[in-house]
Image 1 (cartoon, rainbow, N blue to C red):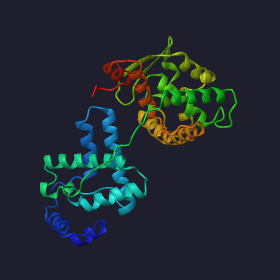
Image 2: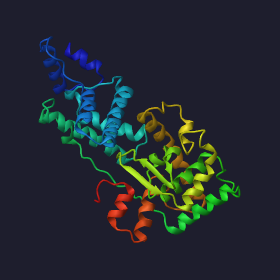
Image 3: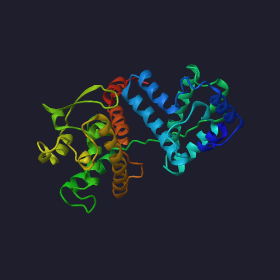
Length: 325
């Protein structure tokens, strides 16, 4: 019976796994079944992390692991004793080849699984001898996020003005690329506002010449003055006020349930990839060699604040970081 169940689980058969299955078969039927690793981990994440962004990141990694099990092994769960180095190595290869994830993204997924394994050992669901990360070394190469220079920012601003006047062939005024360029510049003008906060920016957030909003990642309330260049961008979308909840049309294109925070986040993640692709095309058009992405707007804003003589603590507060470090 143990061997049959192990074959049905589609994981490599080892002596240790066969022994664990036999022990499970010999256990009294009235005993409480061993919890599933993923289900247990998802529940644990909700209990140990107060920060909603941290919880969301860990949930995302666990759901990705669940998706891997479904696509590669035809199942949605895995026992603590079945989780070993070979499964994790297969997971990393799947992320790289099937999803095209960068090393840093794969490292992030594995960190979540490693954290859950450590908690499982502490809570008595896994033996120290069964710890799968004993045989796996996690390493990552940090991606260089180079802020744009003042000259490069000026090139983007000039391109935006020419675009709005219909003087350039790409991007056209009402295309995804045009919205991407304007939203990138607005991120920078609003002191490095995160992409998610700009993407979901509502008209109700504009009050008395300021943008007042709550940061999605940290839940921190922010109030930023609208400088003239930011007001110019908002004027382009003035006809949307009263017709749409959102300032930019990105979320109008998605069919997800936008009545919940989770639905909005899923929609933003899907749009973000398209926006970054358009930003890279625009950078090539204006002769920018640096990698363009929505996140680079924050680095560029921070760099400009530093160049203007801002103190470190003020830059940290402007970016909404919870720690100066």
